[in-house]
View (spheres, rainbow, N blue to C red):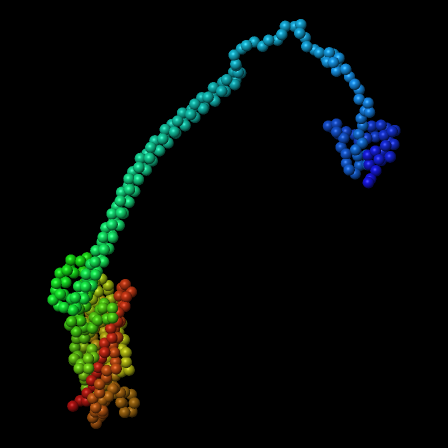
Length: 355
């Protein structure tokens, strides 16, 4: 431990010589500050003997109360303030009165607005109740309508099945179908339009949305849809004269694209020509003609053996009559709602020798 405070012999010697002047001086507040690094730290000056005084006698010496004079009695006056404070308070009161008046007007306005909003709220509640009631009625009507539509749909299906099985029942069911909804009427017209077309010999697509009828040619005993016979020779310009009638039997959908494809090795006819669009419940006609170069062409070789057999040669015909029925005509249509349908017509060409 370091020799600080009274342990510091050098500092104690200074105190014996100089007294309290050897101690650190007090600051402006009369307080001595000590630092840990100062060896004189902790040493203060004080008297070793405390004087004793007679307290009672001291109190007598400082008694200055003069009771012989008249007492200073404060008069009993009403509460008052300075005129400046009073005037300032009056001005403040006037300002506050104006504020109160404005706030009262604001309160009245807000109360009026609240009354209007309460009236509007009541009217909206009444309207909401009416809407709820209307929605409930609509739900009930919808449920009844759905039940009626379900019953009507079942009746329609039964009517269509019975109309196919028995012609007599179909007549009676027609009157019943006419009493159904407009949607069922459109469906009936679509189905009966298809039935009318197929009854005339037309062929229907897989989705029953359009039919194709072959007009011209011969009736093929082999059952092909398009059958013709010819005895083309080289350079012949014969005309087939066959027309295809394409009927759009839908009630609302327009055919926007008619696409023809020849499927087979011997493409003895050209792609049909005609319009590319067909309105709903309407039809269009397409011409089908021979491809004379395939049937009776002369070719380009030394022997000019173009065309299909039997061929015409300088000295006569080569080969016997031949039948070609491996070629099909595929008809694909696209409707404006994106649906598609397709029909494939089987064909047969009978090429004969010229007699």
